[in-house]
Image: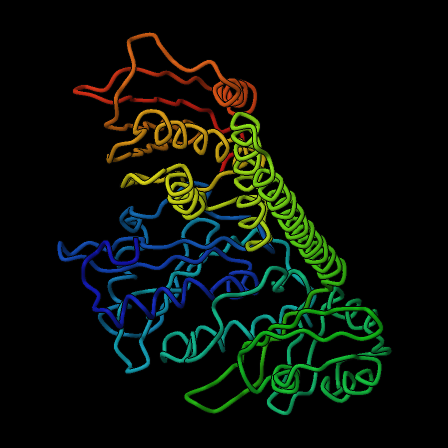
Length: 474
């Protein structure tokens, strides 16, 4: 919705996207709903974005993005945009602060409306005073084109703090002016004891660094409020996430708003998940190696067997096992329980066609996409497709050149695969009855919850149609 009004250039669109990505702290510290209003080519004032606070109830329960500004404040919004000056207004129990939004080159591109409910419970004087100072600084920065700043991180990590998690107000020298109860508790757990107001936070935290295994080089910048950045501090196994927003007045630093959150349990859970992922990756790697070893042993055994039927059975078993190992190779490479199946199938199709040929030239073509397939279904799907393609080469194209085309269509959970060759073909209602066919029918019915059908091609050859249901979503 940012550029639905159609009045912004590329710089203006980018500036508003950055503002929307970073305006939650302002909503929280003002206990207010935030609205971005843009003028349209039809001389309307359109609401382009809306942010609700986590520290108070919302004043607007409906989705108003895309709607014109209410008539009750339309006049004030237009006046602020034309004069490039902030205004205040009130309607019933709602107070409005109307602030021009300027880019870094001082071009006004829209209006920020801060809407707060007068009936919101008032905070203690110290809280109210510090929150008000932070609010004034941030609104002034927005109207001066200083917020959001250049180089500020936007891809915030899971667990990045908000105002409600813990707030510290710093002056220009990094001295704590105010610390919320949640912030005090977080730093107490880190090992910082006593009162925080009146102290230089960076000095208090530095004393705990002897118990830390590593220190982010940006930590002093954040603790002193000398830049808008995100970092973490760890001591004695406790992890505190920190986010600083530098407060300025026309380029001069006036202080900072520092948000903090105890993310110890969150990071511990993430480390456990990383360990489990690494373990799963290693298991899949070992399974792949073991399967390839078994496949190689079967291949060696097949070379010693004289009976053609026994040799063929060993070759088939070796090929099936190697197909399964390919899926585990893909799982080991990604470390996930899902496979981007297109790449795996492309290798499988070339391998199946190459191994099964006995001198003839067979071309293969793959159309469509399987998408992401869960590991439990990927193995069965790989074996089924390998059997069908191998059968097409060994029987449909036996002793002759030809081609095989695989067409895939995926729609959510439903998967349709058509495998067509231009070989000798089959009669209507006819299909194989060997072990390979039994394996295919069993896997499709039990593992893929689907069906398979063999039919003569439109001119010659055979068309195999597989319909499967993917129980595990992407």
